[in-house]
Length: 439
Image (cartoon, rainbow, N blue to C red; front, side, top):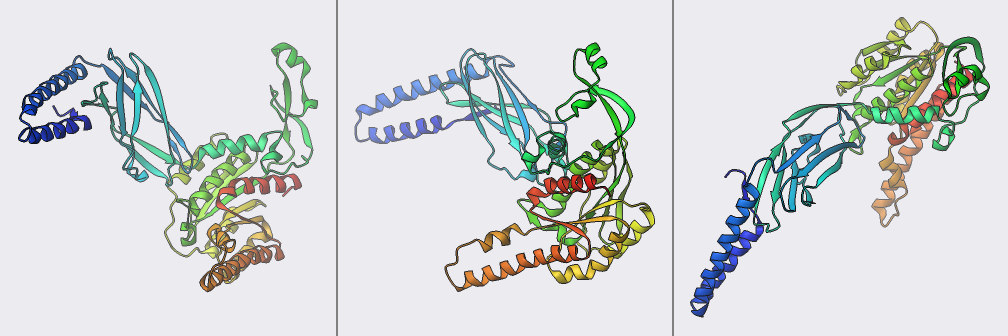
């Protein structure tokens, strides 16, 4: 009985019967009619119970989850349904979604014909890294009478890890190596020459130099094959993540640190595919989560593991500690991609001596964020004095961001001022530009 649920039509029927019994005091002829309605109602009620509860495994379902969730992206969840009843059914699907999504009214209505199978898709977009627990899959099945519903419970609880955005990583991987990458906002750059040191023969993909086609291998394989040579220079790139309190600033449900982590993973993948070495540092009060630079194929998994549990400690970032660690551990000239945030020119000036010291021995790129809410405020139509004051203040802060970029340029430090959603594409742009020129 715990799986039996009454639907709205039963309550409407009770209401109609009550009204008819009341009216029968005034119109006695209705008394016999009312009992007839009650008899028909109970007959249909028990017939519906028998139809829905008769037999076993008349309705089956299975929830299919990805191996892991990608932070900040739409992750596809699939529910497969199968109706084995000899009649069409209506079902309400209530999936026990992890509490992080706060979807308390999640329900999907579906109709299935006789012996029909159907796949249902829905998307979830996590905003935090960590572990997500899925509960049971509850499905309430009813016959065409829709008087009662039987609850089916499928899929035991399951925990999924939410990692930095590997979906974006794959997307930007394709973009960075595509022949028409300039259509996505990436600059089309002249490639500095290659050595003639042979590495391998591989199958031709769009973007490969047609002059490297190996015609003998092509004839043997019956597919275009090209010679691949080692690049002249293997450079070293370090992504440095500021874990200070300013990186906890929210944007569209995610923190700036989460956007920086997603971008760091995307650029690390591109760097490895370009046969350069990539490493990782994070810092706030002290430098942590260090990963030495390498270009091994397995190196990306080590970076993902370090990024998975990276959290801010809400303290002021110590750029002096960062400079000391970089000076001791990174002994050769490298490209340093520093993800941080400055809200005022005075905050930059406090850290500028350390940034200038880093830029003496390395190619430093400071990546910080536009405040998109303030930018929207500057474009808002003013209606009163308060709106004018708000707009002036917002324009002042936006102008100060541009001054910060100019101040960094004055001291030979390259910078990227970007919105969080354009962070990865802008960073890959800068890396490809610097690599084309040489470190």
